[in-house]
Length: 174
Image 1 (cartoon, rainbow, N blue to C red):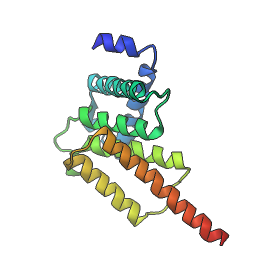
Image 2: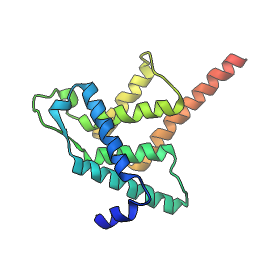
Image 3: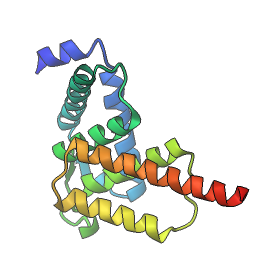
């Protein structure tokens, strides 16, 4: 493992990614009010970062690309966070709604990034969007998924927004 890290470290900002993910996770846990009932296993989080960069590195080499697009970044990062489960429940009295804390945190990190990418600010409850989040949470908990299927989901999300945005633009100009 150290050889892989030594090989990847000069090409990628692994320490910065680790620190950034740790801070994002902590922020979400504070907002959820469970920071004192869980622990973030930094060894597992470090493994998430290594696995992510190994995947991205292989992908870049295989596809002959210099940079990964945002779809790949969000999907591969989320995949490895969900696969490694770096957040561990410490307090058995934590509410049932937090039993799948890693899945909740991944959604809480990924979705705002995607919305920001599109320049969208969610202010009102949107039943369709809420349904999408529920379905995503359910899939993270109970379904089999891969980095590629998550990438497809991210791309579909961006595509759906783009199509809807174009429909609204066309209606306003008609």
